[in-house]
Structure formats: C-alpha cells, structure tokens
Image (tube, rainbow, N blue to C red; front, side):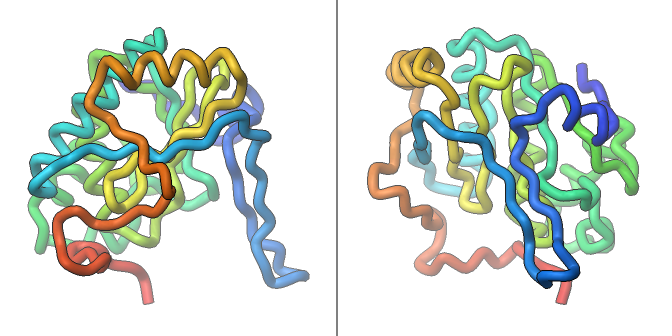
Length: 209
C-alpha cells in the first residue's frame, strides 16, 4: 500500500528529512541535512539499465527487510512536485512513460509534493519506477527516504547508486550486517559513474532550460 502525507505534516513528524529552500535576498539556496553517523554509496553490478532497475528494486527491498523496517517514507528535498511538466510531456522513453502511469495510477497527482509511505509489499515495484523518474528528469527534487523512526537517510542518484547515511551507531552496525546478505557493494572512493555508457552523460536525462 502507498499512503500520501501532506508535505507540512511529513516535515512535522519526520524532521530529519533533508531540505533546501531558495533565499531570494541572498540569491542562494539554504540547506538542511541531519548529523550523520556513517556515510556510504552502495552500487550493484549490472550490464544494462533495464537489468539494473530490476536488480536495484529487488535488492533495496531485501535490504529494507534485513534492516527490520516494514515500510519507508519518501519525500523530495524541496517543494517541487513529484511529476513535472517535463516528464509528463515526454513520449520518447517507454520506461519513463510507464513510471508516470504507475504514479498516476496510485493517485499521485500533478500538484502533489508531499511524502509517500510505501510498505514492503509494494517497495520493489515503487523503487523501479522511482529509479526511472530520477534518472530521466533532472528537474526533480532529490527524493530521500527513511524509516519511520528516522534511523537513516538515503536516496537513489541518476546512476542508480544508493547514497545511504546512517544516523546512529546501532543502525550503522545493522547496515554492515545486512549488506553481507545481499548484492550491494560499497563504493569506497565515493565516486558515482555510469555503468552503461563510456561517458557519464545519460541520453534519456532531460532538464528544463
């Protein structure tokens, strides 16, 4: 099941979510990010974008269960909507089109910018579509996710890597134990790159100009 929460309510109950707002006086963005205990970039070995999307969705759901969490909460780091005009206007990339249909089928409207609570039974499918949304639309916020007790902060970058920050020692220990049971590997130099092309440019990725 996917549950929607208004943005203001989500930030009230889960105040460790990263946020950025634009200061029009200073003409720059203000950032908030909670104090981190451990910082990791997790990757998976894949031969294609399609294969990576499937593997990522499966392994992240497994990792969530191995950490003992029944669901995850997702929220963008600014007030922008989940679905942008840029994404909705595109017909050139079927995986993105399928992702948009998935969100709309789950009643995520064109003006929704709140949080989504996704339980384990829906997590794998959700992650697969979120990956394509994040990969293809550079206009979107960074969609972070955490457990309800705010033990970690994580997000999926455009290259399909999972940036995972633990917020306490206990969760950090549990993460290291859980990673042994799955296929995620730690990128120790913390440099993200594309596994599927000779350059870091993503052909399917667009932005508002």
